[in-house]
Image (cartoon, rainbow, N blue to C red; front, side):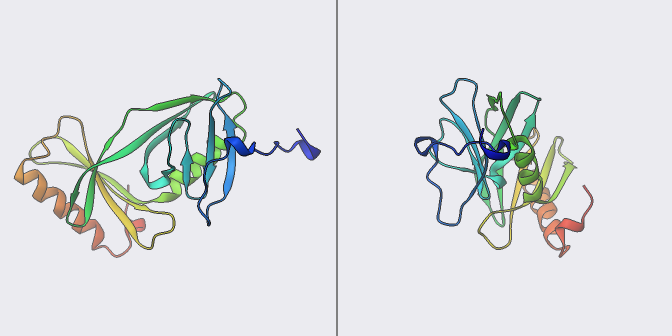
Length: 179
């Protein structure tokens, strides 16, 4: 540690290839010492990934006090005005000296969400409708994530989902809608 107990800079060989307008906010080494979790204003760089995971692509992040568990989103379909996403497998990283990483991840994921609501579907199952801010892009990205076991190919489900997204979009201020 240096002057005023500041964390040392991340070694150049561990730094991810940041974009021109991307800045590193925090980082923590993983327990094995080989990997680094890097938090930037644009997203999360995780060990073993060649590209940044944007904040809008993090479906869930949980800090246990020692482990950071990240559930990335995968786009599985593009529909008129929204994307259908699903959870990828949870990625867990043991951080022995996490510093500000857990706080930054929570704050950034939370601030990317403009609107989120879970709805029951008439045909059974449910869907979460969300509007997320994408760093560096104007407007919101609308997504839906179906509950496990929901029949996503059924025409009534598709119609009801489209109506839910349209209704949320038409409010004019999705951030003002209740959870």
